[in-house]
Amino acid sequence: MLAHHSALVPARPTGHSAPGGLASRRVLGDEWARSGGGRGRSDLGRMCRMAGLGSDLSGDEDHPFHVPVLLAEVLDALGAGGGGNYIDATFGAGGYSAAILRANPASRVLALDRDREAVRAGAALVAGARGRLTLVESRFGEIAEVARAHGFAAVDGAVFDIGVSSMQIDRPERGFSFRQDGPLDMRMSPEGPSAADLVASESPDRLADILRVYGEERHAGRIARAIVAARDKAPIRTTLALQRIVAAAVPPSRDGIDPATRTFQALRIAVNDELGELLAGLVGAASLVAPGGRLAVVTFHSLEDRIVKRFLQGRTAPEPALSRHLPSEASPSRAFTRVAGPIVAGAAELARNPRARSAKLRFGIRGSAALAEDVSALADLVSLPRRGPERRRRK
Ligand SMILES: C[S@@+](CC[C@H](N)C(=O)[O-])C[C@H]1O[C@@H](n2cnc3c(N)ncnc32)[C@H](O)[C@@H]1O
Image 1 (tube, rainbow, N blue to C red):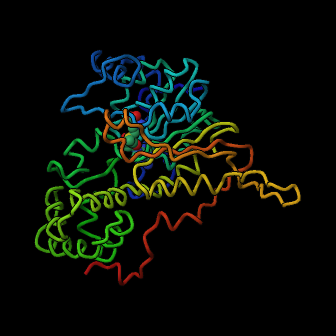
Image 2: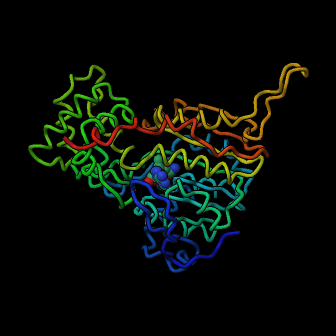
Image 3: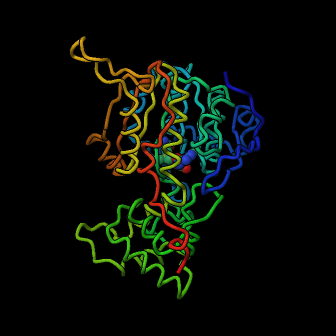
């Protein structure tokens, strides 16, 4: 079923555009594994153990590991014990991929991640999986194309674990967090404008839109004005510089949450076009899941969850009409026979992993009806308000 790949295969251009630009697509497959994957034996062993193919899940300061969220629930939702071909759209540290492979020795996984570092670090897991795991550096907005190119055109399940990994958020040099100082970057893949570029170049109106829509920030206007006033004096280049500007612009929060939290979420979403990617990924993945197969999505905030909920519910067959005299609402756009969720972490998981606090899992079971790929009804959940050219210009 799996294509055999050379160690690192350069990307085939696709013409699909995103703020991050087109990532060159790299593939780690079994020949990479045979060549040793360019890593030492201890790294390889550690990655496999970390991902659950063995024991001893520990990270260190340089290599903070990501603890998979809602793992048992995800495996259940995917029906992973039954085995089959699966897509892990957000490989991260490979926690889901490894668990799917471990759940059934006949299963195969195609995994994607747009983060070059995550793909590089996954080489050891690819090696340990002996041909059952293919890992591609790609955005999941391109999932359908990537899957078809690798023999995963009809799968038993696809899973998304949306958001950032611990390896991204805990490394100051990636610029996602204001807990430690670092460059104001926030890009998951190396291409495209960084958060510093957005902060330096967007108009005050556009900055306020980003903060209001993607951060649900009620002080959006104030913060945008403070950013513009600050950047007129000196470029805002670091995470702590931005955090201080935001903290000085808004009243102190009563809930103890840092006032910059929403601003950082908003910029991260904008920099990586996260909501546009999510919508494109859902459509692509739903087109790959075979009848009876599962599409499962874990989200971490309400903007993402709303998109997943409306996407799945809008394509799910209604319960059969109570009266046989009532017209049936079944339509070809009802691609899922059943949806479930939100499923949230239990007390034991929350005690182990506080990052699971806001995680929500939803999944749908694919029926045989054709998929409605038109998502224009969801566009308002993804886009910023349209503005005329003169208002977008920087003041
Ligand atoms: C929360 S982590 C996934 C963790 C993973 N489930 C595990 O158990 O290790 C999310 C990952 O998705 C990746 N990601 C986010 N948006 C993406 C996109 N549009 N395309 C591909 N990967 C993406 C991030 O780079 C990150 O590595």
